[in-house]
Length: 117
Image 1: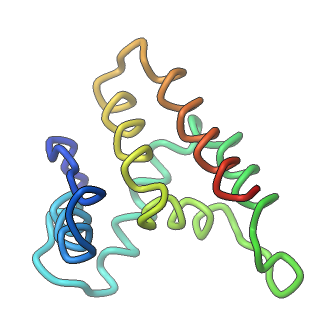
Image 2 (image 1 turned 135 degrees about the horizontal axis):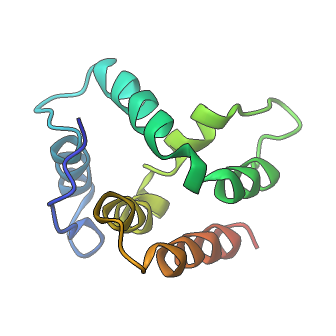
């Protein structure tokens, strides 16, 4: 389902590398609706760790006057260029059940806050 092993480097490279690394993390070679299904499955397996993050995403949604995001849509936003790196690190820690989950979660929360100032 989700590939936790890639070491992401897109931020120092290009948008093309970002798209490739995103596909690599979902074990895909090209974009299709399948990525949305895989994100839904992943969300369902990790949602207990994401309640505070999802609430912050919803609170800071720049389109809040136009639309409301549900939890899964909010989770999908975490795979955007801005948040993918930190989100991937958190997912790796959750998968490995390490004691760094709280630290990585805090980093992602701070990133979300800093993007919306």
